[in-house]
Structures are given as C-alpha cells and as structure tokens.
Length: 306
Ligand SMILES: [Zn+2]
Image (cartoon, rainbow, N blue to C red; front, side, top):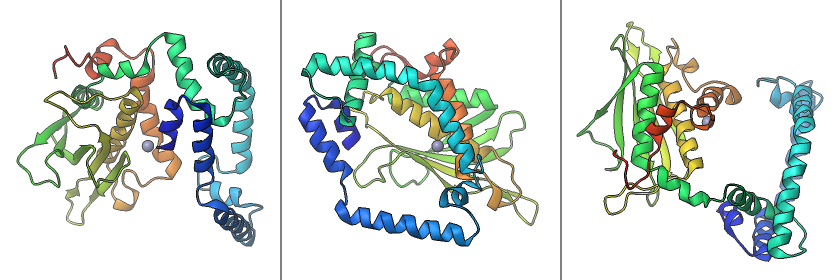
C-alpha cells in the first residue's frame, strides 16, 4: 500500500511523511528486538563454528559463502554505478523541474521513476493495461505453456470448488497422454481472500508403494481485478509478469517425476526454487519475444477476441 502510494503521490511533503511513518513501523520497540536478534544469531553461528551468521545462513544456498555474495554485489556495483548515477541525475532534474529546488530523497524514487518513464516514452503507463485484458492474458499464457512444454490442459467443469470464480484444470503429457497433475486458478480478488500472489502446493507428486504415481496438485492465488459489465478486467504489465512467474511455479510443480514426495517439485532450496520461474519470465520480458507469442498475451480490450 505504502509503495503504491509513493509511486503516485504528487506532493513531495506527503510522500516524505508516508515514507518516514512506514519506515518507523513498530517504533523503538522494534529496534531493541532487532538488536537482540542480531546478537543471538551471531552467538548461535559462533557456537556452530561459523565466523558470523551470514556464513551459517548462506552455506546451504547457491553461493555457499558470504564472501561470494559480497564479491557478486561488488562486481554488480562496479558495472552498474555509472548507469545508476546517470539515471539518478535525470530523476533529480525532473524533480527540480516539477517541485523546484527540493532535495531528492528515497521517498521520491518510485514517483520519479514512474514520471521518468512517462517522460521518456511520452506515454501514460496506465494506458498499457488496456492491452492486457485478464481473460486474454490467462488464455494466452495457458496456450504458451502447453506449446512450450508439450502439455495439454483440460478445464474440469461442474466440480465443487471454494468460490465460483475458481477454475480447475487437469494437466496431461501431450505425447504420452499420461495424467501429470491438477491445478486450480484462483486469480480474482475478493473480500477476505489471502492478499498475496503465490503458488501453494496442495499435494506433492511421488511414487506410491504399489507402483502407482500420486500426481501433484497446486493452486495459483492472485489478486486480479474482477470483470465489470461483462468486460474483462485489465492488468498492469508488472501484474502480467507476476502471473507468468507464478504460473511457471505451477508448471514446475506439476512436471516433476520425483520418487519421494520430500524431494518433489517446489521443495528445493529457496533460491534455486526461483530459477525456473525467473528463466520463464524472459518469455514476457525479452525484446526478441516471438511476435506470435506476444499476440497471444496481448490485444486491445475493445477489439480483441478472447
Ligand atoms: Zn517465485
């Protein structure tokens, strides 16, 4: 909420007020709790033979040592500092133009990044969403994943679900016609619903002792706006990327062939579990995205068929 506000609030003093209040959530009590937490974690790591808590926490993850993380960050910083400084200068100039000689603070960053984009491409970013009706994005995304992984999704109608907007699909291997799993799409926001976009593994896949396979089941939870007057609701582009990212987790969950449930699908080290979804996001983000696939996901809401 606060981040959204900071990206749209035009009055600098209001942005600052909100950013400071948000940054001080929990008050001084939190500072004391955090200080104690740091000390206890350090003690724990030392007892286990590590020189600090970072080394203990990073050991099971992909970089394995905190030294490697710091080297990576320094390398990134070297490569990006010039570019970042140039872009920051543009944002500072923009603020100077709009608000006079006011100092540029962290609270200005989101607002002027958005203004900078509008300035650069002379386009209201909000207009872009007219090209991403929810229905078209979802149907295009399902088609892309079926083509990419040789899968077949079949919607199961007349099934009991927890809300009438929830859809259930079975997933089949297109060449062998084996049943691979099921997924639910619960994408529209509603009162009382968990307000986060994520994938929940309802059942992991595994081999059973009688030789049959227990198939995985997942649900994609999202907060897309509802349809109005029979028209499909529209998505902002970051929401399109987010749904695509999360649906990649669904396909990852469904497509594995693990023998043991413990090692099935999303039960990987936290950072590695993100790799398939980050790779697949490129289908939405890359500029050499095949033209036909762009058309699967996008079309003006007044003229496209979906
Ligand atoms: Zn993810």
